[in-house]
Image (tube, rainbow, N blue to C red; front, side):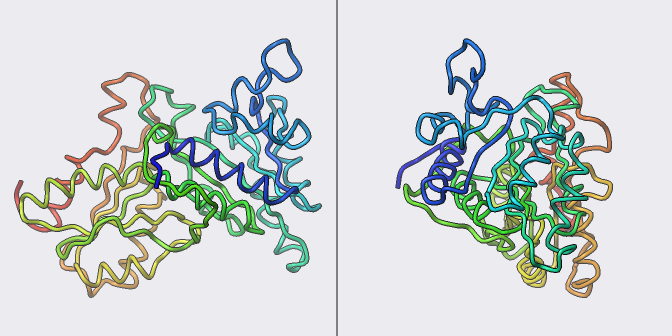
Length: 337
């Protein structure tokens, strides 16, 4: 199986689905690059190069550059989805979804419900997120808890190239609106990815490592942080299970609860803000449904409740790291490092 980057895996998913289904279109800012000007067409392929090469293959009627007005093109994508197309709309940074939030949570998310299931909205909204790239506080947030809160939206956060391809194909084929979030620090990471099309189901967590002592739930890029911590903990005689939810709406509660029942301990590693975040949500689910299985307190490893700093030293301090996860595990285990 070939090794491919996260970016290549996403590009392959788009190419597979556009070739398979003529109703799939891609739209967003600079998804072509140069269109309408004197520059080279297909120069960019989006802010992170994910759609590069698709213009030449599928043409300007299916790969559409848009003005810098998220409210307009997300509204257009919602309408297109309601009338038979399967749009994949790219927002450069998840932070900009605030500009078009009404179109997402008051329109796209509610179409199926308000029309009694007679209308669907097969819309995918892709966006980058996450700190670590020195992009400052308006381009670095992890805002997936906001969208998880909205009924009618599916929220997907792939942590590796294999899942990125399979989850995006699943998202494009889904009849509900999907918020598909890609950590910008993962685009150049590599992993084994099949050449053909395949899907990864929503609501089925991935198990990255199994151990008897503690369950670690890690989201997106934080899976790599958890794995680094687990390797060090193993050397100290503490064996960890690492669960990657893959999607936070739907959330695979059963897998989390089953492993917590086995280990009796839970640490959640989440890049989102701590208040009303996914770590807090998972904590409440486990406290409500598996309290008597717990041998110690639930520990959350998150950034502080502050905007993302720009200064490199502060941004590094802001993000959870392996040492933070190790410390949380030792605390819940009642051991010392």
